[in-house]
Image (cartoon, rainbow, N blue to C red; front, side):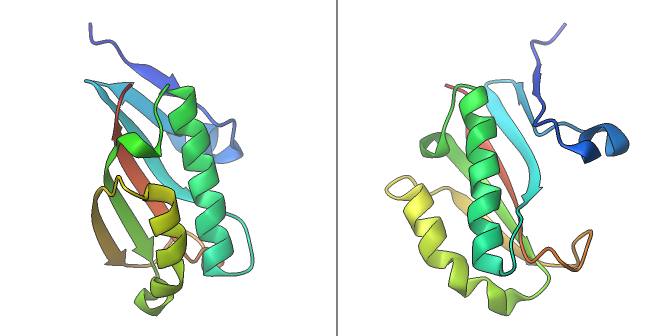
Length: 120
């Protein structure tokens, strides 16, 4: 049997939808797509990264171990204002990245972020 650890953030949708915030398996931490709260894309970006950072920390990892990140936004024009926040977060350890323009689960959400990190 595989050694798998599931990390829940306790959010209401985890039980409703049937997922968890992160799964540690095969030497990696897979963090689910995460949205943040706030009135604008930059505030939501910061909050999503805070939630992701908490999940990584619970897994014993951190942003310095992130190897892959996917950004999903309903409006690609809103991505550029997030760049300084992302550069600050990943610093000298930038991951491979993809940005996808798509609809999110609710129009109030302006960015969703998903990461994969090496388990520490």
